[in-house]
Image (cartoon, rainbow, N blue to C red):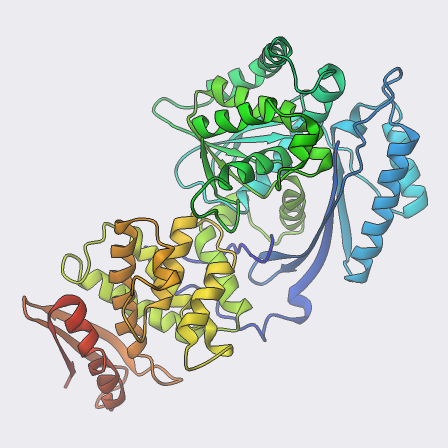
Length: 553
């Protein structure tokens, strides 16, 4: 996972403020880390991921990611065999990827070859050539197994919650459609229709004439009908699945759609696109020549040739499923290979434990990545959530969304300290904003960063970039309220060791009373009391009430 992790043991902050993992960045070393490389040999491209697997936290992060356009799908038109030129491109790419993986001292290289190789009559001979010449044993996966690995990859980077998800992966030679939830896949389908295959077999004129486009859509619909029928039969009454699209085609189309936004997202993972927006992008693409498409920033030369058939697959599938919105996932088969390795080696108990709390796991990873003192971050988070629970309807009007955002911001609020102590809240905002937070939407990601930004010093101002980045008035209200709670919680954490056991809150129309309960009887909390009282002016400015701080006993 690109600069992000998923652990099997992290808690749900809705039930607990204290994550169970308690390791600093310095402690995560030695035998706890295993390096693995995964190679996905696709119809159009070959991908490499080098991952560092933490066997204690049961997480992994991607150290390096590489891609090469090998075009194995350009098979001999008469025999259907892989051409010598395509095999040599793939062979040379695999040699480079092997050498790169070896330089990272990986202990194992896990691989998967998909439709282009499995359908070619000389595909197995090609894999034997790779084994003999490069020492790489490639797993030739079936369509359903390809779908299963895609499911594991998407599962690792997106919270499914209580809703089933439809996963759509448009490859060069096949399209996988999966119905799954956080516990298991209900339906795994693979259809022999893909962007490269359609372009090779049917596209003679580009732009595609209207009649040719209608034929293509009818062919796609007929090909996908069995898969769509299968997943529809397994959707329970009352369920409304979420459609997740993952592939180079989907990401390129998403990038085109996002480029039209007033504030394009930093990452496409989790980006939402309506069917109406997709239709507009598709209409734009089909009217252009390949040369015109090459001029579009998100599209490279090869993608310009095959994106229209891929876009028509995406558009037709959405129409057949009757869904109005899709979510993009940057994760797919190659990340699934890493998850599968972890499952097979006993580093994950099951898929559900891996999926159950992605948000908390990715936050814990960032805590360790930025060398945050995790014990102190957990104390601040505990106090912040205690304040949240005791002041509902008084200090905040939140219906529940802000609680998880507050927890994440509390865990990460000090991540900027290793850059600059005096203005660390500003650096924390930047690091959180530009870091990887799996399971959070773009808007939620911005809110977490802003809550951390405003936990100290001045209140939000219109001129601040961090404030302007927030989309709606509601988001700004949540940030305002959660940042005040975090400000009070952080003010109580002034020493390396814990001294405040808990906090009691009493409120009136004119006063906010905080009573500190010490860890030990007669413990001196004058430093914490003074620190909280320094928040009085901000509390008065924000809420119009007087802050009164006392210590039990």
